[in-house]
Image (cartoon, rainbow, N blue to C red; front, side, top):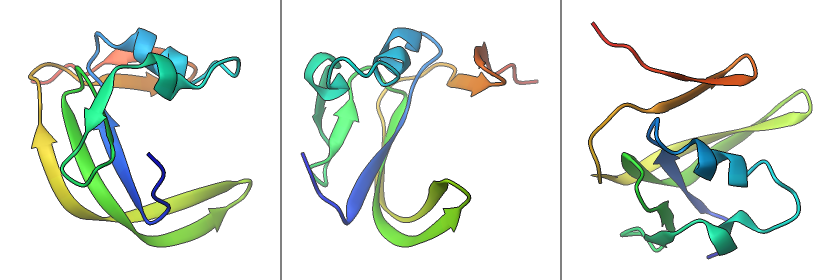
Length: 98
């Protein structure tokens, strides 16, 4: 699905490292191998994710060689329960709450 004015934030679970890794590979289009369904806004929501957050693009700010996209939330779905997948300093981790 291509919609240049909207995007979906997918909150992966700590059991979905393999899904995250599909987006690092350049050989294949990850959307062809990662199972997903359409969110209420018609955007790709990854199956098994903890949540999906549909947004419209509010602003785009240049930050060095990156673009920082600021979204206005249109809606959100909690799809699973569990701990989110974290990535910091080149490796995956888990959230450890109180």
